[in-house]
Image (tube, rainbow, N blue to C red; front, side):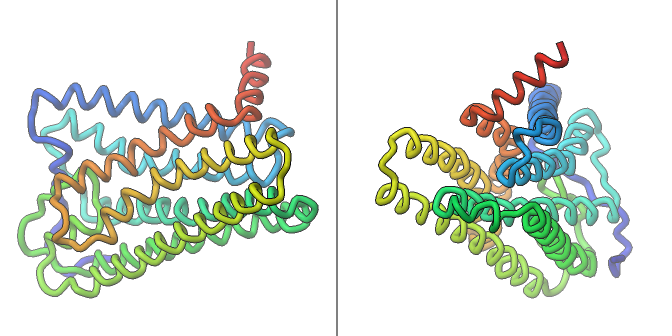
Amino acid sequence: MLNQTSVTEFFLLGVTDIQVLQPVLFMVFLTIYFLSLAGNGAILIVVISDPRLHSPMYFFLGNLSCLDICYSTVTLPKMLENFLSTHKAISFLGCISQLHFFHFLGSTEAMLVPVMAFDRFVAICKPLRYTLIMSHQVCIQMAVTIWIIGFFHALLHSVMTSRLNFCGSNHIHHFFCDVKPLLKLACGNTELNQRLLNNVTGTFAMGSFFLTLLSYFYIIIYLFFKTHSCSMLHKALSTCASHFMVVVLLFGPVFFIYIRPASGSSMDQEGIIAIMYSVVTPVLNPLIYTLRNKEVKEALRRMIRRKL
């Protein structure tokens, strides 16, 4: 995965070049990072430790929390370091590694969301067959499969990007290494890389998005025509609403960055949108699930009481 040029490092220009804002932004993003680790870590611990939450829904929720912890860790520590440093360099290998793990974890999470939606579809629409369809073995197989696919999807982008020639500026107008900012710095023809980004990543995102919507569509249709209990209807719709909020927060920015034409947005716009899905979304996911899920809140209370 070595490039064919003499470039040994890149410089991440970050969110802003206004020096007076650097300490303020450092504290803001440090707080966000701490909240992300604490919130997702708490969910991960409670899902593992509480036997009442040993079900497919919470197994996948644990996977989501694990992904969010790793996802924010890929970008935020380097971002925080650069806020306090005048030398905002990252090695070529470090840049490609960051790109790889960012897309690995991001694409895995994008595929996990429709799996979680399918789990809710089976639980609500096929309750008598739920334990058979969503057995422990099946859940593990599904989780392992999406993690492996996510890894190889990211490997495609990291290998193809590492083979580009970089003969001009090595200043990246972004706060982390991503494919699109690196393509802007590459010399020669990057059409194949751009097509892979739009087609492969676009297919992943669009496919996951529509599969998720399809599951929720069937759930809503089923509930309105088959369910006569208002309490059950409210509980099911509440669960779906929390999941759908995750879908909007995840896929909205992804469509803007990776599926829109390259000339359709500026680097400043893309930087703001990237903060949404790489920094803000991981900290909002645990809030969405804990605030709208009674079982998770009760499990957290039980865990706190045991510690006290």
